[in-house]
Image (cartoon, rainbow, N blue to C red):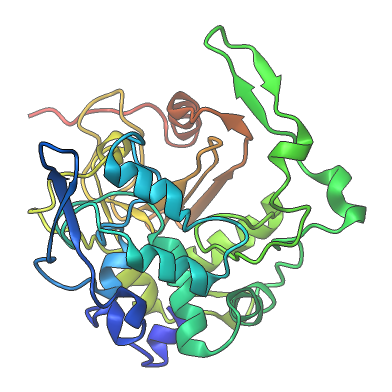
Length: 323
C-alpha cells in the first residue's frame, strides 16, 4: 500500500500488467470421465484487488491430492522454501486457477503474490523493502525472517492440542526450521518472527490512522480503504470466512460489517478489522474505541473458542438487540 500511495499501480489493474507470469491463466472446472482436467479461460483477468482480498483463484493446498489437479499442484510445489519469489510466481502462473477471479473467496497464496509484486514493482528485494518502509520506521527491530543464534532461546514453543485437551510440544527443530535457516523464499503471508511489543506497535499504527510516534507509514484514507469491505454480495462461496462472524474482507484483513447475529459469535465493534493465525494467534484494530488487541499463543489446531473467551473478556458477552 506504500507503493499504491506512490501511484505505482491501481487496485483494478490486471496483475499481468506488472507480472506477465500471470498472463495466460486457465481455470480448472473439473475432470472428464478419464480423470483429465477440464480447463477454460477465466471470465476476466486477475486484478491486484483480487490478490489483496483472496479472490484471485490461487490454490496451493488442494483438498484432494489424488486428482490430476491436486497432483499437479503438489508436483509444481510453488511454495517450496527453496524458490525465490520470482520462481514461486512462475510456478503459480503455470497452474490452473481453482475458480474464476472475483467469483469466490478462498484463503491462500495471494499475500505471497503481493510480496512478489512489491519486489517486481519496486525493484527492491521484498524483505529489504519491508524493512525500509515499515519495520525500521516503526522501530520493529525484533521482527525478521531469520533469527540469529543468540535470540533462539527466546523463541516461544509450539504445541499441538490433542482431542483430550493435552498439550504436546512440537519439536523445535521442526517448529522453528523456517526461522533458523536462510531460505530463498521471503513469503508475504507468513514467516516473520516478532514480539508482542513489536506487533502491538504495528497494530497501534493502524488505530492511529497510519502513523505512530511521529512516523507516518500510510495516509488515513489508505487505512480506511484497507478497512472497507471489498467483497461483492455476489461472492457467496467464502471458504471458512463465515466462521469469523458477520464479516467481509478488506485489503488483507477481515472487516466486521454487522453486529453478532448470535451469542456464540465473537464480539466486536462495527468497522473493526482483524486477522488470526493457524496457531490460534489473533490481533484486531477497533477504531471506534481506539483499541488494539494482540493475542499470541502457539497452539495447533486453530482454537476459535479461545478467541471467543478473549473477546468476551474485552467487550463482555454478546448481547443481542431486541425488537
